[in-house]
Image (cartoon, rainbow, N blue to C red):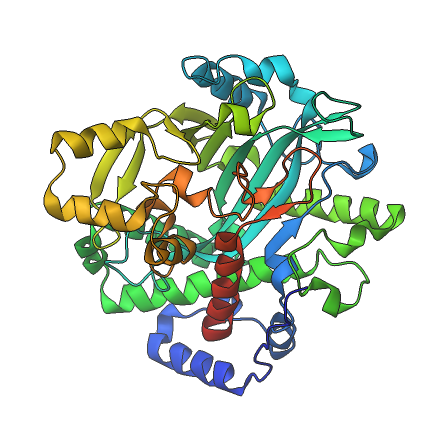
Length: 434
């Protein structure tokens, strides 16, 4: 079990910052969107690892499972069958072929974990302050789990070596004041548009707008995290210290109650209509990771609940520019990254300064230097766009294990070092900003 993280419990400094911000912003500040009450602030300090990295059992009872195919009406649907079909079509032209539909049915897919991110960077690199230009986010992990004895392992359930990750911006209308919600949405859009042009684009915000953006973003994050804390059952707070299966699954009654709270939470923060990004990866047919030693990644953008496949790109950690475009899919093995990247490096078509960045951020060999490993593990050095999909998924101690917060076969949940470090940084951000 991980050591309990010490969390700041005082509120006086936070209250002082709030008062100062309100005085500075004057008429632009609305009381309804100010940071939460002292009681809510004090409760926020109880936020723990299992609140931010929510792990579900691979194969709980059916009435405790959230299937991708499940109807949650009258709440908004959470997973659209059209996404699944789009991914299957895209996999057909890769070594994965039709294996996802041959080895699994849509009804096998279920939610196995999700991440509550207090403030995810909006930039593609560290040319701007990622702790300022960020926005709260939800990340869901869906995976197919087959029940019954499955070859090659005779086990009651078997988690296949593939997954979908679906990502959502927390909606600004989480704020109770419609005027503030509209203003937060407008500022978020302005930040995204500015950052799309590079780090210098962040200068598009005036100092007043930047302060207002941060104030409103913090209010959205506080409301979001308060709802995340409300997911807890009656279990002792100390049981949320480690990233592990949620303690609510200790018994059937609390598991069913937790599922109900979770569905309502996700319908609010991660409805299918608000999907921003979807990524998928899969092993080819055969259910034999060491023999296949090949994982294929896809990426899609979400818009209005629909998905469109997009190129997978590697960005500079320094300024966010594109260092390499993998095209529509990326193939990684335990030993190597995608062959297209090596071909470009060998051909000399990548400038020397970009080559140096790539060598410092991608696992180009089976056992890269410790400095590269530390960098890929730590988002304060490399954001997700600054390393390759394969590198980010090869951080586990077990060989042929590409799962960051999900399951492989009949093993316990895999929690990668990258996830562990991310959660620690998230908790630190909450202590510093909320």
